[in-house]
Image (cartoon, rainbow, N blue to C red; front, side, top):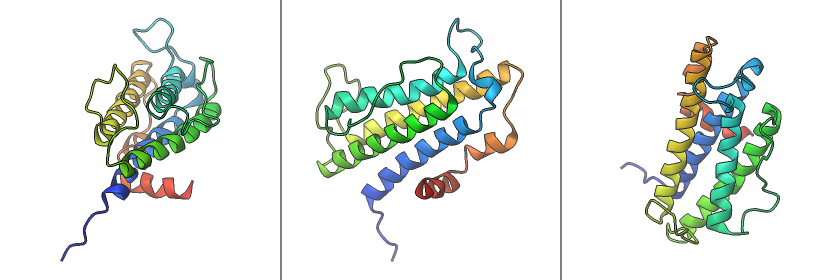
Length: 174
């Protein structure tokens, strides 16, 4: 008989993997690409996309959980934050996001509050799906921008984005 899946663990592992894939990409972006302007945008840089990942997490956490998981959690207001600063911030917002997801799961899958502008059902599965899609979208933009700038990422980096089992194991070591 097959063992039942622990849905709490599985959902949290999806977030762990998503976060680790984002961190993997950002850690492996060549430093010279960080400040490059994205073709088609006047002011947006590749680094600013990484900052956006953290700031979006902060916005959702503060809106949904109010003050519950926001201790020390702060947006990055500088568009010139370094890779190292963004990685540190993403680790912090990851932990707050993980706590929010766990709290939602323990509350029967509902979000603790529902913003008036929420454009998806008020449950943890849709919140997680939103974040998976959002982060994947912006990772894709970073990859495309590197190609458009004639500095494509290595096959090791591109392939590493799809090594989800490996990324999940890495998240447990961090």
